[in-house]
Image (cartoon, rainbow, N blue to C red; front, side, top):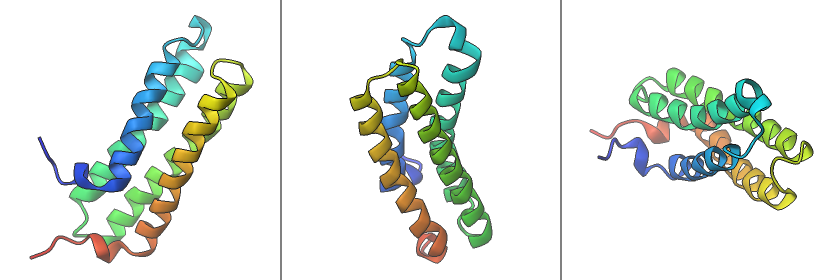
Length: 124
């Protein structure tokens, strides 16, 4: 099923690492279940959800910008949780660096989307 937003490069680039975060977080200790594990999964998934919501409301540039700002915030939050995961030795430095760089790229894309929301208006 294609919902339009799935064709966006930013969505594709955010979705893949969110799946990786999920799989990596499966090996986190039980005591992290309701803290780090839950938070990193929620934040990484929320990036994609905000993209989808914003895309559906893109006819309203202010709403679109707001959702992309929310997605960017969740991206930053995910990056912080990655650092905690690395520093607690739940993921390797390499895993963290790889994901961190990918989220940096996604964050840069949000900056462009926020500055240029009219590029994403539906075409008649």
